[in-house]
Image (cartoon, rainbow, N blue to C red; front, side, top):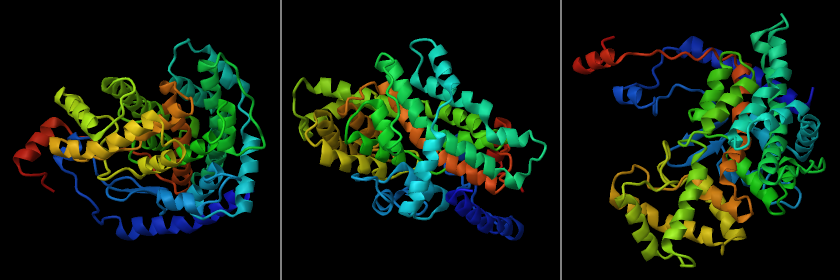
Length: 440
């Protein structure tokens, strides 16, 4: 058994009694209330999901296993000659909560390279889709096609299925998926936009470096990839892609069924597709200012007010949970300030960042006037020549697999049950509203 899997088993065996004790001794302790607004409004802020992989504070932002993004970048082992950690080091950290040693990272690197060989039929599935198919359909279909080789499914159908052992084959499937996704994503990009001129993987490189190589983009795009995959990996478990993956897997579906569902949720314009829409808006905004016009506080402020007065929103600003600048935005801004400070699009985005919060606050119709992750991410891709913005959500999907897969491994390890919330009717809500609340 690989050292990571052994370490994970130790963590699982230590965690199971904690959960059992909570359910047995404190199962009736009330931790939240649900009002009609939350019921009708998509269960917003209802505390009813459990994950130890990441936590999201409205003021502080995301923490991975207790560490902020900046702490994560600072503490994890870096790729040789890189400013950023390897995805392999981050994967070890997400699963265990431990800082990996260089030896631990080397073992994961070696393990992923052995798993990264994508089955031939996956490419057949992608090629069989009609021209013009959205890249997210290609990615979701590719993931779903790999279900035929699922080790978890094989274990379930073996007649020897044991709920407490289910995490082992789920771990194997998840490692296979995470290791293969960069090659699948790069294939989709080259197949769609580079006349199917496919670049073969380089087994000497880590996951992020190899992805940049297969995309055909030079340095420092390898660091862009490492950063991008890590900051997009997880955002607690209530977002659509993470929750959809958890929900489907709670039916004991394998990760290929489950993550395909998560990707389908990620493809929505209110979730992962937003980065594509934000960049399109920024390019239109740039044209609105005028060819070669330098963005200033005055002309950007006027253009933003023109946007709002026309009944439109400012894409990339606001978040369902956060009430401050998204640290994922800040991480990308820091990269841009160092590597592309004179890029015209970045200069525009930077000026919008200076001006938009004040405009939105004065406008008074938003609870959070600060930028989210999508306000910056497309600009970096554009700068390095990845200008096909309908591909951007595929990049998000590669990164989000890390968090979704880590969560599902732990879901199976702790034996989480089938998710089955209780529904109510509008008549019931109207009755309880008239009575001042439900009578217990």
